[in-house]
Length: 144
Image (cartoon, rainbow, N blue to C red; front, side, top):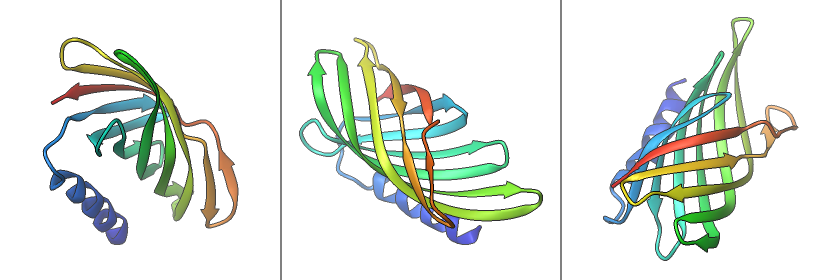
């Protein structure tokens, strides 16, 4: 648990000290909820960090996204993502790690609000192999 919190704090800390560029902070709501932070990484690419919780689990994830089709305020993005989680089942905590894709659409309004609908299909390789495809969520973020 201590290692997980240390890794999550380090990832969030790197985002905070990044160069001053457009950012967004908010929530992703799907199966559970996540605090979500986006930071522009030059051009139209951006990084996204998520810290989430759901029934019996906490998780952290990071994605590097490319804007595939910017259409004014509507953008389609895709990129690789990684994640870790601690899941508690029957009073036993299990650590898991995986990697996959981050795909979605986002809409930025004329005022500082962003809505997104995204999907994170993930191949879990620790503790065993599995494929998770149910991580679809609605994102609501404040742009600053």
